[in-house]
Image 1 (cartoon, rainbow, N blue to C red):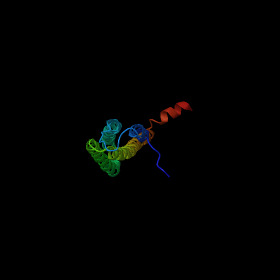
Image 2: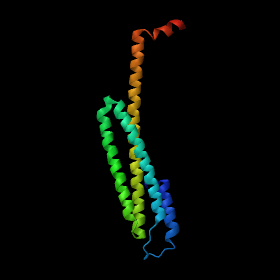
Image 3: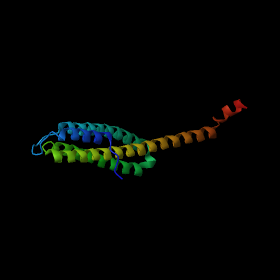
Image 4: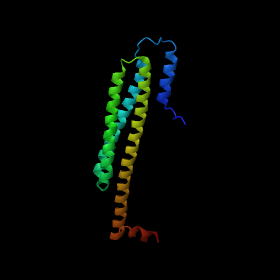
Length: 160
């Protein structure tokens, strides 16, 4: 079963189909418009990297109990950052390629960007869940403490 296309991949294919029919195969051309789409997507990925950094730093500060899991998420995050850097290099190298190779490379770059973006969202979700679990533990502890000290029973007496 074929993998569904992302909007970016669909745009790349549409632009490629529209322009390839009028271009002789022996001419080297830089398809800047296709590279611009991947560059824009890479910039969006960088924004996600910044947001993920903030989330992970907060999670590591607040969730000491989940240190091992968050260390693993941090390692995965660094791998995604490395992938983003490699994608940037691929974009820079693609500038002088022949059109057929360029299209293939842009397609592969778009897929790599999608994969990296998905991985970042999973890392964000895990870190946010750890933060929320820590918040719930803290609130449950405060409830238990307030009941133990009798502050929770004052409102119960008024209600009856």
